[in-house]
Length: 187
Picture 1 (cartoon, rainbow, N blue to C red):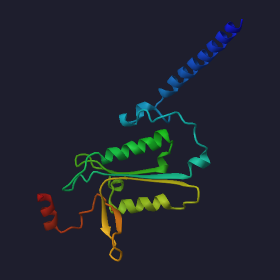
Picture 2 (cartoon, rainbow, N blue to C red; picture 1 turned 90 degrees about the vertical axis):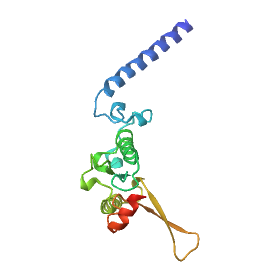
Picture 3 (tube, rainbow, N blue to C red; picture 1 turned 180 degrees about the horizontal axis):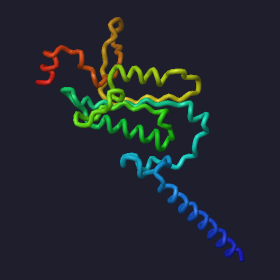
Picture 4 (cartoon, rainbow, N blue to C red; picture 1 turned 180 degrees about the vertical axis):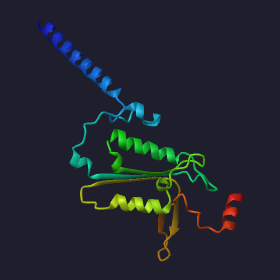
């Protein structure tokens, strides 16, 4: 009798798990669900989980600025930085349930498929994005900054051995004289 009771309980648990699995499979078929693996890049599969929806107050207290610079029109373009930024944006939006209004993404993709001017990672747009990211921030708010691209170090003139780090925007060479640009392109 004791074994039959254990068997009955196990069958009930199995049946409950199978119901949960069927419900999950049905909900995963809907495109607008957070955590839907079909809507994520392959590199993020496995990082997605069904998370409970955040309370509106908590969800409203976070922002993210995501930047990917491939420098597609420069003499030394990178490959993959825009993909990194898109993957990070998908992780934030799908897995961590950031809303569209909580995430700003600045990317330069390629010469053949340029981003709209307001979405390119230029100096002006990055500074505007940082102002948006930090506007009205209160203690306890969550802000997230992600940059994929070139960086630079410059020595601090008055102190030995110390450097300041800089992010390099996609329009870093726009104000260089033409002869310098031509010389860099030839190297």
